[in-house]
Length: 198
Image (cartoon, rainbow, N blue to C red):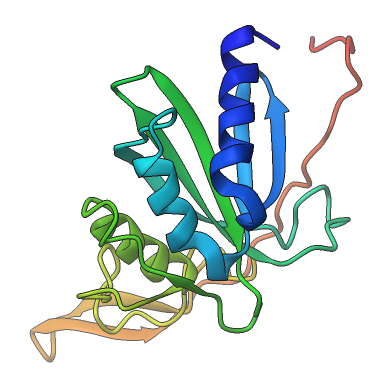
């Protein structure tokens, strides 16, 4: 690990203190994990700390770990992952928090820390069903208002639940249950390293 990453790691541990659950180094990147209830406090510290200055949120996304590690994952199902950039200090960090309830994943909003989180949180709500407490306008962003379910969840059917089509008799677009048959999916094949790919 480079001296810069070692310094960043030490400063992250110092700044986050008791809110830090885990700090990981992989592929020259640092991921810090905090409990969902400490997400706002951790975000404020990451932004304000003199040696960190993560003033820019680049991305916030949801993750569904239910099929992670070929189904061997035993931890919480849903996490929010935030990528932060310090333009001032030219450094990056990934912040992750897991929801405590798999049936109803809830996180505090980060809109007051980084206003750009607004649409990212709406996207995570729409696609994963994640709720963000105190979000100023939490509503669907990418799917239709009447859409049922959250399409990025691993248990969402690949063919969906409803389809829309133009009905010439009613002269409008209508929604109806999916009329196509389930498809057999080709199982994912993991090849051994160095295997011939012909």
